[in-house]
Structure formats: C-alpha cells, structure tokens
Length: 97
Image 1 (spheres, rainbow, N blue to C red):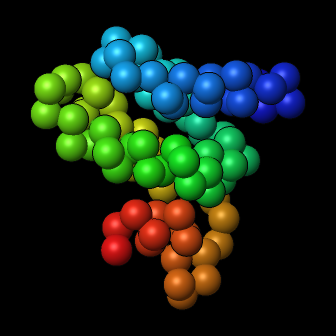
Image 2: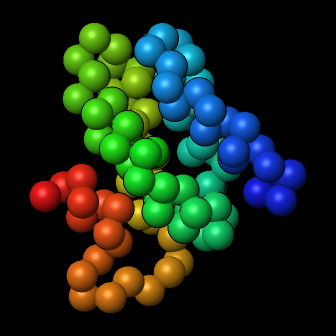
C-alpha cells in the first residue's frame, strides 16, 4: 500500500472540515498501519498529521472523530518499531509540549 502511494492520496483529506470524512480518514489510516511498522513510522513523523490528530482528539462535536483520533494516535505509537533516542519522537513531543 505504501509503495502504491495510498498514504499520500489519503492524507490529502486532512484538510477536510467534514466530520464523516475525518472519521473515515482516521479509520483508513489506522487500518493502513495495523502491524505495519514502516507505515506507522512514516505517518508518526508527519507533523501535519500529528497536529491534526491532536486537534481532533478534542473534537467534542463528533465523538467518532474524537475516538478514532485517540485510537490512531495510540496505534502509531504501538505499531512503530523504531528506536527513539531519549528525546522521543519529535513529532509527538512537539505536539504534547
């Protein structure tokens, strides 16, 4: 899927302000990284995605988007097999600080 460019095509929907599109996008990304360390690393270092995830984790107007954002964020961490220096994953630290 990564080599076919699916990730890039799907990430174009990050700009969407429509909750149903956001919900499907999040579910699709979560399925793409399931047991795929390379995909999890690629998406986990995408600053725009991480910023949007943090924003959607607080989406009070759509519980599905809020839940999927939290699930995707935890899946990115869980499926990534990369070793991180003591400073952590810069994308995640940038958003959490």
